[in-house]
Image 1 (cartoon, helix red, strand yellow):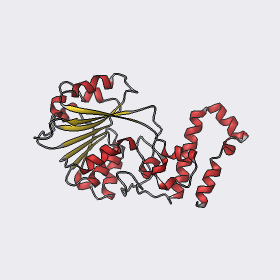
Image 2 (cartoon, one colour; image 1 turned 180 degrees about the vertical axis):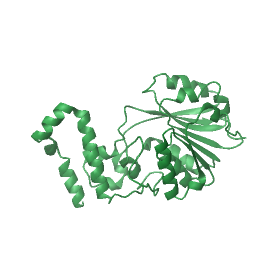
Image 3 (cartoon, one colour; image 1 turned 30 degrees about the horizontal axis):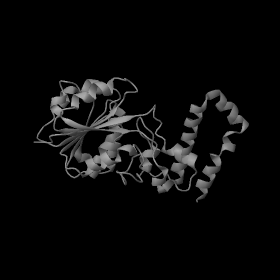
Image 4 (cartoon, one colour; image 1 turned 30 degrees about the vertical axis):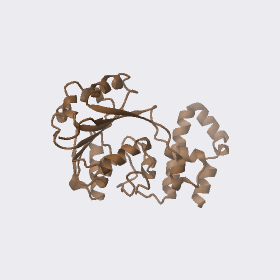
Length: 273
């Protein structure tokens, strides 16, 4: 065990956080603030132990490089470790090895998936969308340092009209993380244009409890459905964490979600014609 790991374990021991100054502080703030503060410290110590490496260490996009240790609208450590949304790894690996012509990432953030797919697919063109201009800028920078900018097309808001432009003769995969916009995108009018498209949609029922019950039945005749549920990643799968105690592992692997999440994997019954 290296010295940084040893010091981190001591730092995150119960005795440290039960010192009078912290007891008074966190009794006032509450356990949720305590967890967030511990996570910030854990991530800093993890990055220090890895010499602030910006290279993804594991998972489906192992070897992908980040321009900085900053993620947009998510946490950084799970992405560097390779544990980020590990629930979806079987789908992500399947997409990477399938001969898709087009991959559309709706809500691309800094580019974890968009650039990852550009690196792991052979001939796919990657279309990355985000309404946040800073996110698009970060995605573009990440594409450049990974040498895949020529495969990627970046744009702002993806609309229902864009769905209607999808070419049915091409194999297309859509990854959608649009923070509650699902009911506007996937409607009775747009679903027929997706009959030959495979999709992975993060269902944000935490924002609107009717999203899944409204959207998913629309695909019942054209797609096979498999639901994936969020869960804590298995720390034993990530050797980089072997030296640390259980609390530290939980902290750095945490994705700080607002609640349980589900993803709908929709596989076309027809495929491109």
